[in-house]
Length: 377
Image (cartoon, rainbow, N blue to C red; front, side, top):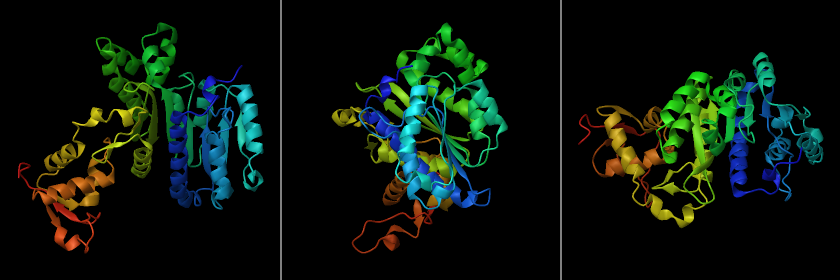
């Protein structure tokens, strides 16, 4: 089996993907290691479609970056149990060799394992029987073969387990109406959900289908135990249409917060400071696409509507509102400052007491906000 062309050289898209995965791994381990010490002293990282370890141009792929970080961290090197898999025997052998050549590898308490197995029913059943230590799963298939509700259920069932799924949107979009791969689509979405989705998509134009397909995947993941689901969009080189999606799934809002901030930093840009949560290689040359967007105005209006008549801290406003939206905490502070300046909310302490000499007025997490009962105030 010849290596996939994808690994010939590292594209900007693959670099963005790796950055998101590695940065979340670094942040996630800081959170879970404290708790893992009381639960057996181990944390895990599992990559089911790991690839050869390096691109043809010499760039390191995600497995190598993960292990290099673990080697550098005195606590993690004693706790990390890493499992990598690729069905391509050329890739699995190449990955074993690349891992063995990492400087300082021997310092890891647990030797990384490399498997050469087909991802499918058997792995899902095996994972369902296992009780995982807190583990970050990365699932990055070449297409969609091997993806199933059973697999997602098996990797999300245990405490501290999060999952990052990267998939080719175009292939799934085309596969939904292709009878030759109907079983694969039914396995991914669930039979009833897949049938309902096909019926909804039938009259739609290509641009209309995307939101419904991605939401159906998110709905399926929530049904398998992933309470919080976050999407990051990759557009085609020509811009506009989606080519891939990275979907993050967690059972804890803290992980959701962390990942949203990471995605916001590596995305192509912001509109009024609000992250697009996408990688669009054309955004720098097409700024007019977002010229009429007013996301902070929309946020401020939403807060007035949803919290009318209530008093709460800025942190409470954020925690009760942000899930399922692309706003980050800084956006809430900006929106509340704007509302305060316009006299549409009351803040305690008020702006004049919070402002330090010569500095910009801030809106700390513990500032209390009172929203008018009439949202038009």
